[in-house]
Image (cartoon, rainbow, N blue to C red; front, top):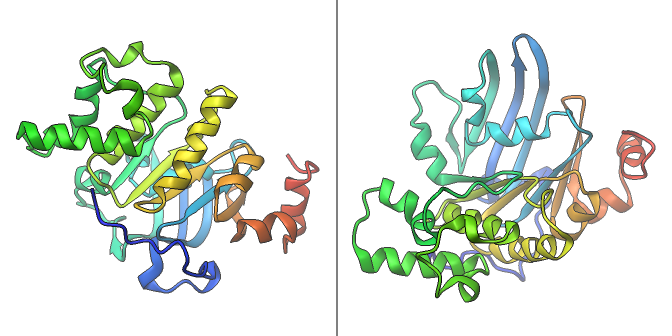
Length: 271
């Protein structure tokens, strides 16, 4: 497991004046269009390391598109055009010729619905490690235990590692997918509405898991659930009609928003 680099007692940085040493992801003048239709327009923001940043906004506002820019998932969308600068830990990641496979090892992603592979629980977790050429059984065994422990799943499956992952509950499958993502020790974990298909108890488990994981990773969360954003995130960005309206510490944005449009959205007057 990577060493703890997050100081839980350090003061929360001002996201509006975030220095390079505290920035995990950065977008500068980012615009995205699909087939000539603008989806994001001139978005600039810095996402701090070892914190949870939530992206909120109405359906179709561009928040999932913004999330997918950070691991180049939009590359697979036909007629998608991306302009502007994207950086990961200071490295430019928006350029042509970038090794996107290597990028996605550094930036893991968890989707709305669990997507385990039709393999055993064990083979799901080690899938990325095998792709990296790791074959040593002891190393793989250790990685499985560490990843499943970090995903709060080890106690439930430690005697079932050879079972097909589809025999797990939906909530367990989502934690397995998280374990698979973190087994390769990425720097950032992107979560696109990871609890929208889950029951309230499983949702609470995933939320607690997200909070524990920020000690090792930077998390970026897309959610329609503003209560969830308020519960788990340190910072929140409100996106509306493809533009970044407001980006602040979560408690400040929800209790004293600077923009009228933000206030209208969080109070339900804007949808």
